[in-house]
Image (tube, rainbow, N blue to C red; front, side):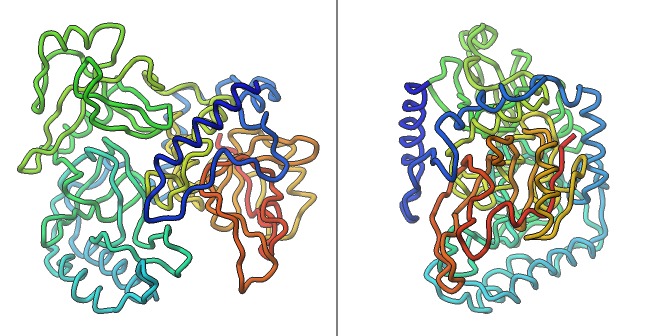
Length: 473
């Protein structure tokens, strides 16, 4: 166990350092040991072995389908793109675009140098590109898919806008990152042709046109993205190659990405495959998958690509069980925190979303929405109901239980020596008692800790600030 732990430390430190951004503070070495966590607790089997029937399925395949339909009916932001009307009143679209613009323009935001973003930036650089007045009376929907992971933005600009000097990693225009092959309905296009205003399964906003390939119609998009044969990325990410020899890597899609499998016959646009590659593609060494590409005219082309069978992927979704949720969570241990998916990282709800998505649960992206899913075990006021919170946690099922506090979401791991442990993606721990100084310790990764984290600061511990607990069942 000790050798495995030291190897894990070395690997994750090297990997984290390689991904650090040059213009940001260096990432802390990980995995971090916080609060009362021990080295043994940094391995999933430590927690799984403590559970009775940990491998038992929470939902079978047919039950999962109904569960996801229930999630979609409960959370308005969870949208089935394929149920969108083919046309939409233009006023609905223009009103929503205008609301998002006006809301951000009214806020006091700063650029990366700590200077207030002047209103002229909105009026002269952003609004003309949005061409709100050019939205037609009736919008005829177009349909596309992401050809790579891409940001969904509140406005059609890459300009970073933050709330204060210490918030350089928290771009207020960044909604989230959608994954490769995510289907979108396209409402509108910017005047410079560089942005689409889209509806994705759990978010609406602006994406770069270069990252979206247009399908001829909705039915053909559905045929590709809802194929019955697909790979699920169950590791942190997976390497996809252009060639069956696995030499020419094209992308590294992240956990939860669903990639259609190819039958191994022919191709549809894009790079042609040689007979030798075709032979290798049906061997026991690789999976053959379809990857979407954007042609010069914006339309989609499909090309065969290849994934090693040794990769951390599955055909279809793994069993949704407590054990598998915990295993998936720990595959992201020490991975970078990233607000809205920035810097190829995951914020608190993004971490939870990817873990559950990799097991077939269409969990919403936002923490407030995630807290509404499944069985509600308790709702609380911050700094109150301590005895009730403890009782709920002692009876809650680890892995499938989410713990929410304002602006933060966590996955419950279990109780050890009367301490409640979680795994979560967090940016910093507050350490001081003075709100004016607002002293913090930068964490910036997925960590295991108990709920006493932040307990020596003016904001109070994670436990103090719990507002809800729910089981995703």
